[in-house]
Image (cartoon, rainbow, N blue to C red; front, side):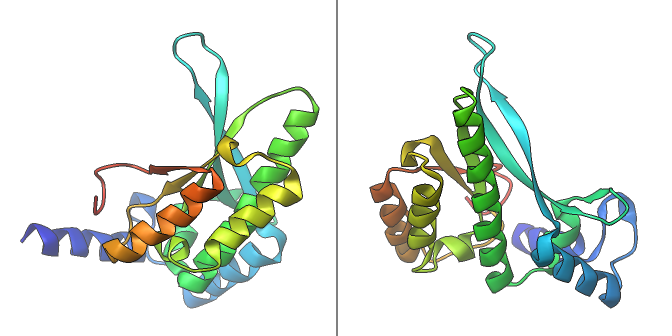
Length: 185
């Protein structure tokens, strides 16, 4: 019963907007997807503070969809519209933008680490490790400065997950579970 209830909640979240608004029309959904991959993706950064000394030591990259009127759409509105291929593309674009900022901040003497969300379906792709390695090299960022936060939004094959995690760990990146306990862990 709990499993069915959790599934129903997931379906409801994917079909309703925050605040109880109606589901997006097909035209709006299509426009969001088009704009997202035509330069509308913007990465915002949430600071992670070391409570011992108050220093900002890391930032978490947060994807937003920039609208022509200057407003930003939260991922709760556009992520449910994306299939696995689009989620993988979003990860690549977002990671690249975030690493570019990290590189720029480093050049200004601001040493920060970075956290980027990663969908399980993207993690399981054989190309994922290559995308991460190449993006780190392109931006001159050491692997240990990157944490990939695995989203708990999907169930996955544990053996395949272990192999994919091993590939990323061998690069030197850190892995974490985003919102632990809210999904399938």
